[in-house]
Image (cartoon, rainbow, N blue to C red; front, side, top):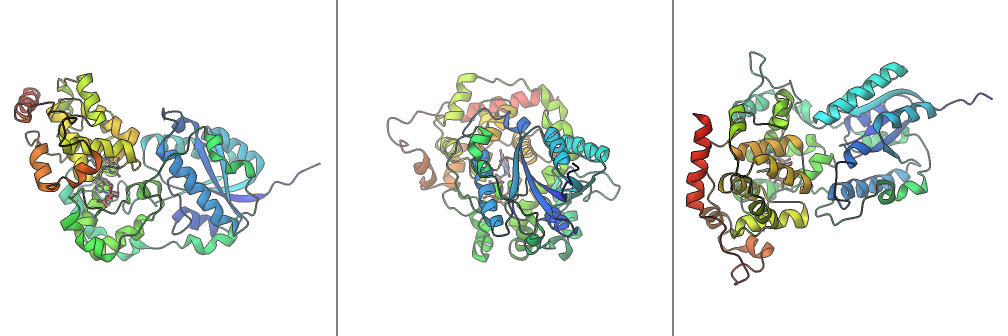
Length: 439
Ligand SMILES: Cc1cc2nc3c(=O)[nH]c(=O)nc-3n(C[C@H](O)[C@H](O)[C@H](O)COP(=O)(O)OP(=O)(O)OC[C@H]3O[C@@H](n4cnc5c(N)ncnc54)[C@H](O)[C@@H]3O)c2cc1C
């Protein structure tokens, strides 16, 4: 007996975990065919996470459950699977008569490689492959110098970015208004237990729901964003990372209310452009001569940095905040990174990997770009002779030790260790070592 397969379009959800203002979802839902939303727990990505209590996995699972709950109102849900993406798609293309696959572009090197494989599979199977911009306001290649070459300095990049911006970049795709066009199906009860499916444990998540900053927060941002003891930044990093909030909505607010905040969003795009145009930065210094630095890489010192027992209280507070919550304030990220690289002379890639393991908002491009900035090895980086002083930074940004006391309760008692280095000497040593490779 010939079984007629259901004719559908597929929207492949990845780092765009929202139903509203989702570009590719809106396009799929306007296509005239019922749309099935598919999410794949990719074995290759999960396999690289050695801690089974990874916050990012909990964040995704809880978000998928939330979306499924919303979708049950439309008698629909997300078809959640696990495996190698290509194998999963082969199976899905067998089960359904798929006309088109819709997705938002992901610019990380692994994602681009995976998506090329899936695009080829679609091509072989006669399925149209429709990819859209959703994660950035300007994607790689859209902001270039007049001669067509990529920018490597932030300020002119930001200037061009702003001059290219128009209201059309804030278009709301209103995908949430089209949800009646979803494929109707019962979410399999077993898929509700996504912890068993993935083999990961549930962990605590701080700031699980995006909070769109109000006008007051945004107008105060320029003056307060550097103070780690004030909860004055937006905490949108992981929401932008996983697409639980639309960049168009956030950038539109920023344009109207805070140029400094808009500047931070442009840094995010700048580093994405750098990674796309200079892929070697993933594993080596943007400025190649810096790969010659003879790092000390002392393991015991590294452990003290990781555990937050360096004896420099602002460094220790930041490192403990990171492992306890998956977040660290931006100013403190700069100070802890600078301390590892310059005071301890430990390879910035080791610090980068530690942040990548723990940050809930981990983005390859932003993490790498900021680490290279701190190391002085990147494009438009801090000059190598500028070495953060963790003590004067504390005096400026946490003068009453409020942030420090929150994360280092034993600070000020005999239990707290003495500083592990003499900062003045370490600074001179770092400058000498850097100079030696730049001759
Ligand atoms: C060593 C180091 C590593 C970092 N690693 C990451 C990372 O893996 N992922 C990440 O998103 N950010 C990273 N940052 C940048 C920044 O620290 C975080 O984006 C910010 O602290 C997130 O908190 P927030 O959302 O409250 O920030 P807000 O101050 O409210 O900023 C709003 C948004 O702007 C963007 N942004 C702000 N500062 C930067 C910046 N310097 N570079 C790129 N984007 C920025 C982020 O998307 C952020 O969510 C890193 C910074 C340093 C110094």
